[in-house]
Image (tube, rainbow, N blue to C red):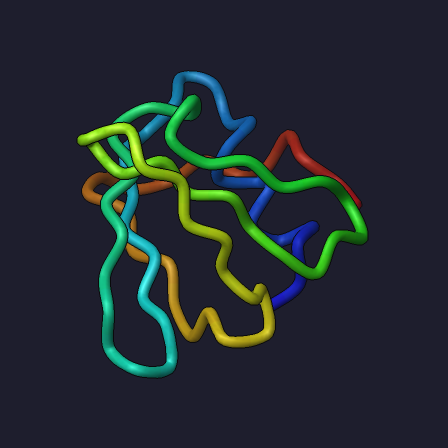
Length: 78
């Protein structure tokens, strides 16, 4: 998945919580935009676990992003 696509979910306003699923089936719940960080053109995604640990994910191994509510990405363009 491209980092630009992931950024859409982080910057949408109002923010909607979402879940990142990786190729190995792990799920990372993002309840607030401060839990995840990625730069445009980046190959990695920084995820902060609820206990404060930081995990770096390979953006190419992210296979899906699922929102809890319908996402409005119409105002974002790459």
